[in-house]
Image 1 (tube, rainbow, N blue to C red):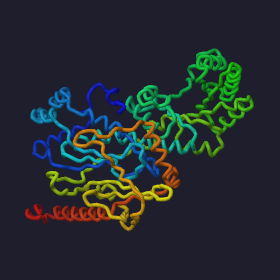
Image 2 (tube, helix red, strand yellow):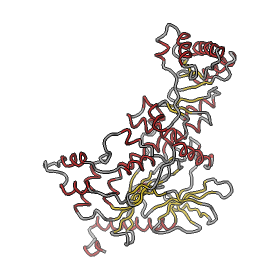
Image 3 (cartoon, helix red, strand yellow):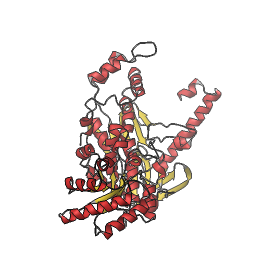
Image 4 (cartoon, rainbow, N blue to C red):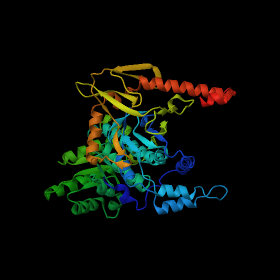
Length: 508
């Protein structure tokens, strides 16, 4: 593991959670329910950015967080100092002792980083003591939601760039220290070629790239002097920012610097455009550089880029080789949250008992949760390996061969997946019996996984505007179980609201 969390934060992270997780855990302990078995799933309901896919991220931090998870003395002292509305302690001393001695026993399964995923598919499954599984909710959501969002945004931006390198330049606009580090890592995972963030470069092995600021140019008597000086001090890393005064005059000055560098055996790597009509200016800059014989000097553009603007610039004929993307990438500008949720789906008293399936009801169909011990089975075309469809199924109910899947939003839509289709189950063991059994692969391998996964998607799913919808459905047994539980819950709710439920019926 990369030990990012330990290197960044000197204090423990057991309290990186919401108060209500501790009050619920206290309630389970107080009522003697702490050891009840439970299954929770973390998933999201809608693809971000109106897209056709999502890139799962954050599992490396999940594994590291759990490996070092414990309640330290200072955590317990803080919890012991909390009081309720009456001024009395929120927690009994016995509960704090319980937390101090807590031995983690849960199992965690998750989708590997870099996997393409879709709405309603569990990214993480937690099985074990309901108290322990409850304590993990907020932190798991924190560690998965944001990097998944940024990795997906990066994949979209890189797709728009059509193979040209995208450089992540967002550190100064990121949402704080951890927002910056998490975003830089997730952006590289999603396909960016490099970052300007030196700490992320050191911690994660990401290539680092950068230019100079306008202040460098302004500090000299002339733009030409500034460019020549920068070339002298960075002869093997010279990219010149040309729009401090007049952009095309700046390109001509950069060309003169580039010719001087060539005469001395060096090379002007690139110029950078950071304002104005980037399509027009890049084309003119390319002409000026080519006319000077600097055909190997690249044109880098920046200035609040995202996938939509990049696509537009390419369609307008911009002569651009490199893309510097900052604010709109690291802040996931047009969608600030993935909207991941963590829902209880089954309980049982002991490992020998059968699971009692649970779901959350809602007036909105999209918000009704899914019962069971869920897994995701991905089917592929036997000839070319392209992704065909995903089945969400419950290990407590089993799955047919062939499998029939039903759209959870429209039960009139179903699809049969032949038994001959190759498949894989996406959730893999991460923690077993409270011990981390998964070693996250190097970041560069997870990044390669993203590229491979996206390559196996139909091109229509990668459109940024009105993408095709990938087939994801509930395996028919799970679908029928869910329908039955919804009906039972609605009938019970109706009976309670009319006062028609007798004591005997409630206990039935």
